Amino acid sequence: MKGVFITLEGPEGSGKTTLISRLAQAAQGDFDEVLVTREPGDGPAGPSIRKVLLEGSSLDPWTETFLFLADRAQHCREVIRPALGRGALVLCDRFADSTLAYQGYARGLNIEVLRQLNDLATGEVRPDLTLLLDLDPAVGLNRLGAKDRLDQEPIEFHRAVREGFLAESRRDPGRYRVLDASLPADEVFQAALQEMRRLFEPTRL
Image (cartoon, rainbow, N blue to C red):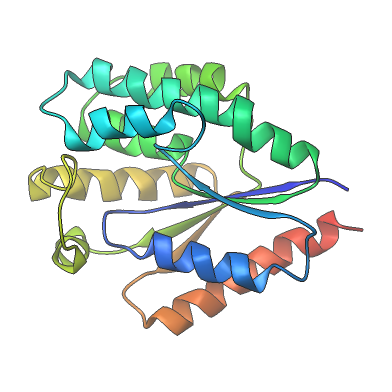
């Protein structure tokens, strides 16, 4: 049985963490194994890298990028690829598209170079489906309690992140599904669940 890889992306405060938990619970009867993971922070080196990225002081944009890529390379090798090989449903909170949105569109690094680096880091592991929770960044940031280093960037940065995600969704409409994260949580969940089941029902045949 082929594994299924679904990523959740979106601006800060868009509800990814809550949604991914609900999707995982809903899929328990469909897969023998459902794995919820995240970036940065999972895999053997993940917690240490996450602390530097989200709790540390200011970082050069390329330093920041290479830390995310190092986390991703280990994450794919040690967590995602083995789970997919076992036939699991893998739900990941952020993946390679976040590097394009944050370090490319918002930080201004060369996006085509970032695409190439992402391919190297992932070993060309690609999501079968990406659910983009789209939300006005001002609304999302107001939903947050404690803010990490990236959360504290100026609002213009977060607007650029949002536009980056939307630009990528237009570039790859076959993989992306854009969900209105300003809707009530139950409506967002039902829309996401429909997209998820539409993907993996044929995959299991």
